[in-house]
Image (tube, rainbow, N blue to C red; front, side, top):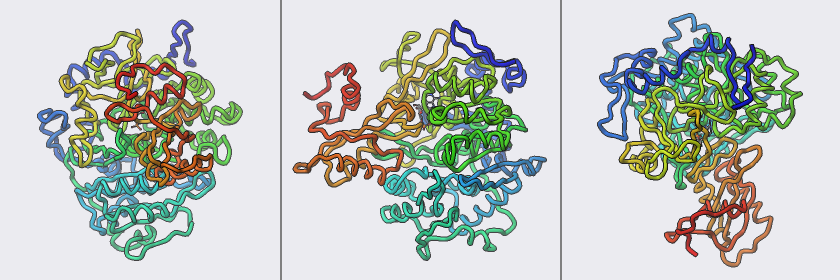
Length: 634
Ligand code: WTA
């Protein structure tokens, strides 16, 4: 039976088949239990993992907001994602199916994955990497990216993956903040038929950030790169050395609270925040959410079409699915290259059963029309997913009707780099409303409140808060615990709530509707960028005196960046200069940060204390009501 739709409320119900096979059959009862018995609920889920030593306390809240989960427990996330599967028939199950943009195919069973990761670990070890170190990874979407992440974790070292779309300054800053001594990169990756010159960017960044002693370079494209003797080493040479293949590599026993990775994300200052996630709670949270929300089954072929360089890739390409022993699909390139049939062709070719992507990708493919997907057999698909920004009902319906053929419920998952995994999300059994992330996941209590922490009325917009800790939460900001407290926990200190930075509303059925960011973060094509990073790139140009960046609605990208610039005295405005500044931001931060346009202005709206009032700029540009201007300096 196909999913049915009721007219009165625009509600989409899952079919009998979907409900019958769902891993969770009873949301309300289980949710109630998970709130009343939060620790018991999570303890039970933690028992699905292999622990070297069991924990003494499930949740330690003695140093709020620095919560600790499964304190005293010892495990390694890689032992759970790989080692334990090797003892079962999953040893020969496909762990990874990878397709490169030019069409090359590589597959790895769990056995092969272990071999590759062990070799990588041995190489890192020979370079002196150990527990307590952080390795920076700056790679295209190739299997070695996942191997490098897992290799660090296996040794008990942390990884810091910097998204391959970031450029020189963004990379240099992140390498320096993590004080990495080893960097893993490649001679490039393919995107829309072109090679992106990652190694060239690395060379520039390392001039600005001198902590790196060794750089491992994976050969992906054969594109010529500069190799600095004594610093740069080819990966394909290293893996042939006896040190790389000395009979596997032992998995380090880590504490539940040992850092697993740092992932930098944009905040309200120019300096990115390095959020720290740990082995124990993160392993429990990503695997549980993945299993329940995407109903993962042994025979599934799971495709999360995100970049592993962002949290979605960390949690739902690498860790969550591998812990669940799933077969993971990974693709290197652009969705419409060389033709807009690329994704649909891959779904048919590999028999993908679950597709998880962003509204931007859906909108981007929708514009090419139904003919492209309609020519392919998409009948293997069972569930769909969306993440990164609110999905507009038009894109939701297209995704549901044309891709899911009215058969596949869409899991619109709301979460953040900080939360580690899904926080507000449907389950396959949940009746859906297009555009709503529906209800909180187990164990999560949320609120939509005003500045004082009072719940707003049903249907009204307010600030989204999370009222209790969860195992997947980031533990701190690397090197700056005060900033962690200030950013997330200071506004509702009395109540002890986490401030998400989003605004939202809840309707009469208890469904959550995310509206968008209320801080200085812009979501461009689902990618998170800080206005401050764009502004500091602009003022680093010699002609710029001051700059402000805002996000404005964009049909495909969700939001697009618009920059306002005050030039230094005597500098002439010109469209050519505007173009040069856009290019400059691209060089410094990355192509996704390139402003849509640059407007030259004589002044910027500011508060009396000198802070730029971006909401005023935004309202003025959109011709909207500006709202409360009491703090504006006239
Ligand atoms: C937004 C991405 C609406 C939100 C996993 C959040 C969403 C920010 C959704 C985090 C969704 C994420 N509906 N908005 N389903 N998912 N967001 O850290 O504004 O890159 O605060 O994590 O993305 O972005 P981040």
